[in-house]
Image (cartoon, rainbow, N blue to C red; front, side, top):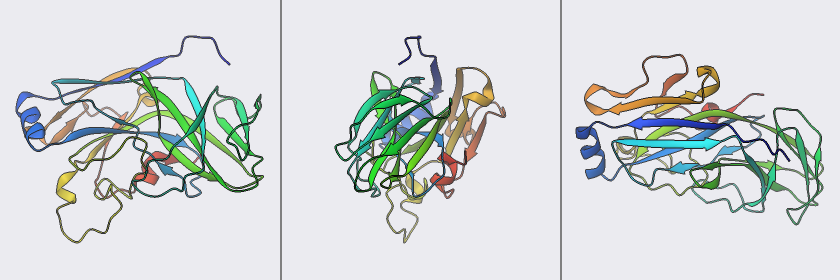
Length: 245
């Protein structure tokens, strides 16, 4: 595996005092999801990060260091996927078996982590990256026996505020409007999650950007740069976070 120092990426989120007070008083928390490129194939995004607390400035930092994981857990909305993880670099393939172990070999696309199943039954696989001090999972896909899967990690993150508790590592719902995956019969769920902000650091051409969330000015502000866009609460999260390779 690589011994080079990984590139560190940072998004700093600032909250003006009045917005911070309002969000805190209504028990809102800040969440992040991370995008990948892969054929969707029933893959789902996982909740990647929850800010430890709200503050005037909140850093979200990660490095381009990767773990691949396998799991026997079913992909069920809001349920945490429990991973068995191993370090891996881009350009390598994990030949993963029923025990969620197996050799890793230098094989596959240079910009991707690849999986090849030697298991007798279907398993689940995905990626994790360090956010803060710990590795955290952010996507999961089914992998049938003898099949393969290629996942290209992206330095693209989705931010949103919600006062609906969402465990880190849990399978996300259909949209920000319905992150818990339950049927919506009124506006109570819709009122509890903000529109999202999608940030593409690769498009920004730099590893660090700053954004602002101000309720008095309509929410997210990223200066109108092309590396950011607002995500409506009813946009399918799979379409936003799992991109065609």
